[in-house]
Length: 78
Image (cartoon, rainbow, N blue to C red; front, side, top):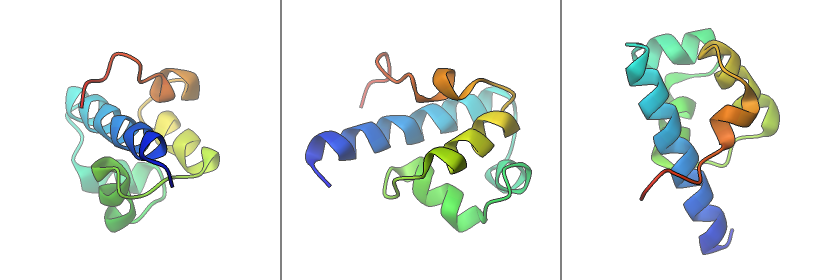
């Protein structure tokens, strides 16, 4: 993975954390809603894992948002 890919993964992770906390969901609850393990969700939120589109879509659905909205990370600062 390139450093640009790493930055995108990190920004997506931050966005997931922001959206999850805005909805007052625990990491465990979001993982359950998205049919992921808590460990997998934690890695995505930390930006150490590059999730598939399918996984991101499941997270978006669990957060009641569009996939495109979830992956729009232009305004997310590292």
